[in-house]
Length: 209
Image (cartoon, rainbow, N blue to C red; front, side, top):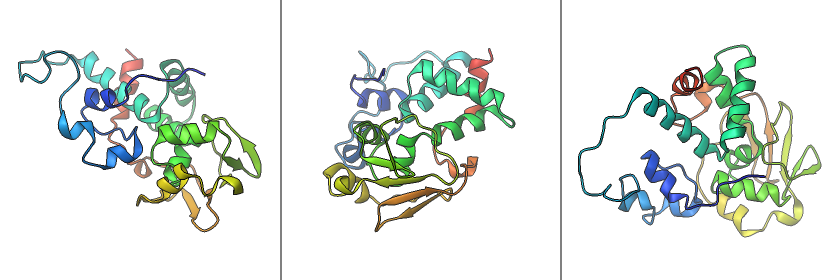
């Protein structure tokens, strides 16, 4: 399974926004974006003139931003786009809904992890049950009625307890039982439920060029 193993803080600097890839550090003054709010690279902090981004460059950055927020590699992201284009409705919104339905994202949304990156690791290590069955597939797409539960032996592990310590609004398409550490999928997410700063139409235009 391919995954990004380089420094993740560089990704936030490149996109010019917090992608919340490192959990606890992102919520603290230690966040690198607070100290270096400019893109990585030699001379990027010198305040020199930068070339104006082309239409292609703007659309590319929007695609890269979405891909990095959800922790998806290029080949897999393109597959999601192809799936979205075959569904009824707006392709861009369909794409975001598919990404939101990933199990690692749902674990993050429910507050069981402090970042999607950490949620992916927790799922891969088998700390969750889906409808009573163990799964270790972060890309599993949840369905309406699915129940996501923290395994009994995993309830007290530090990453899950740390994730629960942050105040995070659970979206309306999910339901959380904080005492039982169980979540349920009530509906598929709508665009207004997805609180990330992404212009999905630019992603559609990028792949349609």
